[in-house]
Length: 351
Image 1 (cartoon, one colour):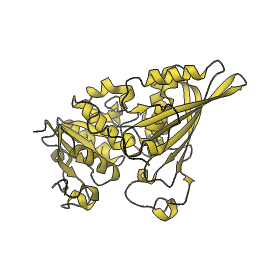
Image 2 (cartoon, rainbow, N blue to C red):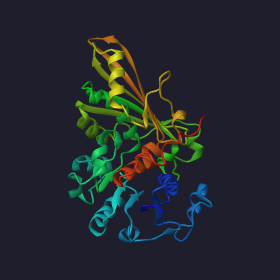
Image 3 (tube, helix red, strand yellow):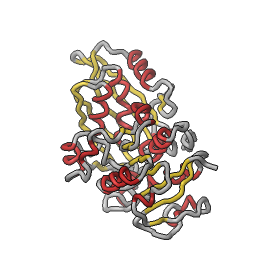
Image 4 (spheres, rainbow, N blue to C red):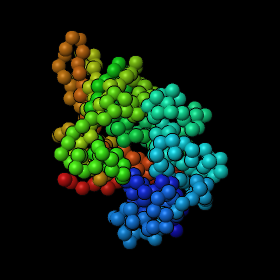
């Protein structure tokens, strides 16, 4: 018999599909219900066809506290602002641990939330440290004891992991410029005029340049990790991929910094980390991590120019797994006192 019970609130999206898949094969956690405002009464396979025959669960329309009843952990696959209305009820009326995949509790700065997410926060008091930022490579111990985990955004995860070694080594100072290329599944399950297949399959386009909502999340996290006077100029690009994010960040370091020193910084930052690797004979690539919870990081150091050198920091993840549901499962495992890698160590497919 499995030791823990889990519920998913907001179960019809692509991220929820990964949550469901991973929990169904989990040796210690039983998925007991999936709630949604859509597809009520229908089997999960009506929306997630890869789950055909894997479970008898059906989508239920439930109040948050009823969805969480008897559960040890609740995972939220809800949109921004919707999650912020659900979390206070769960904190007040249940004892369950909460892993929230929305952006509602990632920031501490209320003004930044209002600027980048557009409008007032539904539960502003909870921004003052109620949630732990759910990046295990930075906050593992805090996640273990958390009641509420704010799982990071997909672009934020990719970019932070690429720059984290510089921040921890005291080498990240000033502004960086980043281009992040993302797959279509990051736009969600509902097609729009700019995300459905005919305009996505043969196209590259930017959106929210220099104003993406993950920018303050990246700044807060890297500043806490040791970056000084940090700022980011970020341009996201939508690409004809289903899964994956590839980011390139340009940072300036002192002319005395060598490739060997950077290699030491990367090795120290990710020593013992099971899901972050620096390839030995190549740079990161999406195909190597697609379908998995692994991240790849790497760098190239440019020549000395006017007293500094430019570092190009590369990172790649699967946006739905390490950038979403997989990282949420990592946090779920941690808050339940389980092995962090349960159900997450499969390497994905190639090519």
